[in-house]
Every structure is written in C-alpha cells, then in structure tokens.
Length: 428
Image 1 (cartoon, helix red, strand yellow):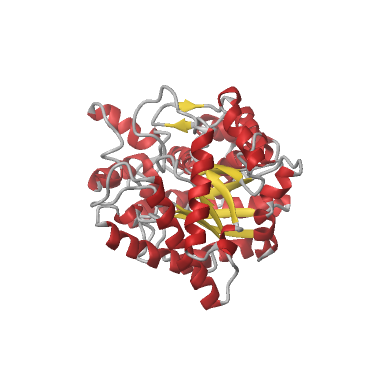
Image 2 (cartoon, one colour):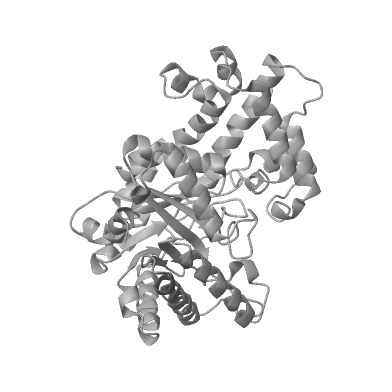
C-alpha cells in the first residue's frame, strides 16, 4: 500500500487507541475542485482522498465520459502540478454497485457492476465503497440485508482478483446497508432517523459472514469503515445539523468494533462546530461533494457579473443565462429533484443545496460559456470593491492574502474555504 492508503487502513486502530482525527473524502470530478483539493493538501502536507462516484466515472464512461484509468490520470496530473507527492494521494470509488443499472434485472445490473469495480481496482483505486443496497428491477423491496451483503462480497472478490492480476495495491473497503441518497434528500427535511446500533452491528456481521463464505477473510480485514446515518442531511433549502445527543448509542457501538470507523455521507453544509463533533464521535471519514461545486458556482456567477462590469461585451452571454439554457435543454438531471412553480424550479436549478447544476458544468456548451467569462477576465487583478460586491464571501481572504484577486484565484479560493472547514474538523 502507499503511505496514504496505509494510514487510511490504520484509521480504526488509531481511533481505538485514542486518536481523534479523520479525513475528508472529496467527491467531485470537477477539475477545479480537484485542483483546489490537491493544492490544499500540498500546502498543508496532508493526505488527500478523492473519490469518483459510480455515476460520474465507470467502465462505460459515466456522465463525465471518463473510465477509472482516465480519471486517475487526470487527478495525478493535477497532483504533480500542485506539488502533492503521489504517496499522499488516495483514490476512491463511491457507491460502487448496480445503482447506474438498477432498472435492469439484478443479474445484468450486477454483471455491469462487476465490470465497473474491476476497472476501478485495475486502475489502482485503493478505497472502494461497496454499495449494493439498491433494489434492481426484479428484486424485492426493500432488498434483504443478507442479499446486500452477499452482493458486496461478490464485488469485493472481483476487486481482489483485479488487484492481483495487475499487481496493484490491495484495496481497503467501506461497507454498510444504511446508505443515504447520493446528492442529498429529495423532500423538505424535518428530521433524520439515526441508525439503530443493532442494525449497524448486524450489517457488519452479515458482511463478515458473506466475505467468509467467498473465501475473503483477508479482504475483510481491510474493511475500514461502515456507512451509517448519524442524523445529518441536506435538501434543496434545508440542512439538518449533527446532534451528538441523538447518536450516543450508535457512537458507543464503535467500542465493540475497534477495526472500524463510521463513514458519514451528506455532511455538506454542516456548521463547522457540528462537523468537528461528528469527527470527534467516530465519523472519521466525512464525505463532501455538492458543497464544493456549490462554492465553485457562487464564484463563477460572481465572476460573470464582474466581467460585465470590467469588460462589457453585449455578445458575451451572462453565465447564469447560459446555464439556464443548458439545463432546460437537458432536464433529466434535475427534473425529478426540483418541484414547485416554474419560478421555484428556476431558483432551485441555480441555487439549490443539492446542486444538480454540477452535472452540467463539463458539457461542451457550459464549458464554452465558462471559458468566455474567464477569457474576458484573464489574469487581471480584480479590484476589491468588485469582489466585495459580487463575491463578498472572498473579500476577507483576498485582503489577508489567502486568495489571489484573479478569476482563477477566486475560483480556487471559494472551494478552499470549504476545504478549510473540513481540515479543521478532521484535525489534519
């Protein structure tokens, strides 16, 4: 294993011995988010965990058009440019299972999921989240926990064979049957049900048995985390913050599972204090994705307005207007997530915490519209009054010298503000 993967593999034992740290999992395929995360890691001498989801990156290309090997190449290129040693980099696959093909029969969906995880493991991804929790077209609903565990073991066996075939590192795994909806909740939030301690213990035991049945005892020793619901979530306009008193019994379960830490999904937009308490209580792997691209979108829209002031050009389309056209032309990534009147849906398309706009930034038309704004501004220093007016959350950072007052510097700075919150919470 690389040094960083070894440190990740030891995270449970370290916390069982009294350690309190953790690591943020950067779940984004956007090049600017990746660049910001790698620069941030290099600056602070920290490990960087970057994960691609099954929908973003898979053997068929995903919505980014990238297979795992191509995504690894992209990330490693950015790491070298950022000055981050590759032994500080961990690549992960998130929600690896039949989710992209869940509308197929289970046998076909699992065949495709196996091909996907083979591609991830063969490409050298060393943190693999096995997520077989979703029912396929011919499955009972809900899917029995025993079936979920058995399918996870099937995928682990494929990953082990791929690593052996290519001579790559043996991966570490994340398991768990209570997996939140990727990208945030679909309805307004009132409360979240914290995972029952007995359910967490049962999930681990079922996976242990399933791995053993497939001759994967040694692989199970490399399972480092369990996905559970700590009671945090976000929706289009709602955030449920971590309440430690509601998770006391769940947190106590870790004393009976010293091999493991908890992995918390949907931690985006948590208050800094709540995020720190989450890590303190054993949710040592905290995933963040939409918050990072939300912060990027804030800066991009601000820069579009700044360009209108600094470099007026009637032929250059406002970025928000361009993105509205792009999203209306291809509504499949937001239509089932945003409800209400046409105006309410318009606001959600651009400003929802669930940030479904992130699926559009890498489309050719969106890239052209973004490039036009960035080309207009170039590397010119932007006056602070304009930064204060249109990207006000970055004015203090510019004044303190933490962010360069250029278009590129402000984009990185907006993402870095979120990364700093996670760095402080994980004690890195």
